[in-house]
Image (cartoon, rainbow, N blue to C red; front, side, top):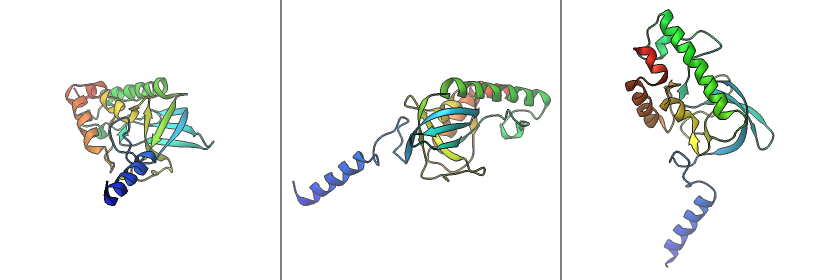
Amino acid sequence: MNRRALAALAVAALAVSTGCLGPLADGQQSAESRDATVVGVVDGDTVDVLFDDGTEERVRLLGVDTPEVHVDVSPGEFEGVPDSEAGRSCLRSWGERASEYATERLAGESVTVRFDAESDRRGGYDRLLAYVIVENESFNRALLANGYARLYDSEFTERDDYAAVELRARENGTGLWACAS
């Protein structure tokens, strides 16, 4: 093997061993991630985590938005849902279901909090913006696929995939998208 090939092999081995090229649960390339335990569920798209180093943070799930449960819902944010009492009531119900789903799936669980290189690290309320990976699956993506959330229009690596997942849920009337009919 020549020097150039050996150097390339050494760089690749170093990148894999440090996680720079390792595949993640949802097939994307690695970005910074940290292991944590979910110590609280605020609502369907916000959780409190305790990192292995003992620090606690609030995490806003990147790329998704579930209907509100602590303030009034806004049907205008959910394409096709009528701005009526029926639309608001339907969304409120799905916001509660999203919170229950998050509690059932995440509370007390060991997770990986993965940050996105294309997204800001923190949002407007100083919450971490991240993907939450539980049992090797993106919980953010599962919210969209199961109709608990809409795509939150922002910059992040998995945006195109998330848009396609939301579109399938909308076309099938899955979850909250039944509110649009």
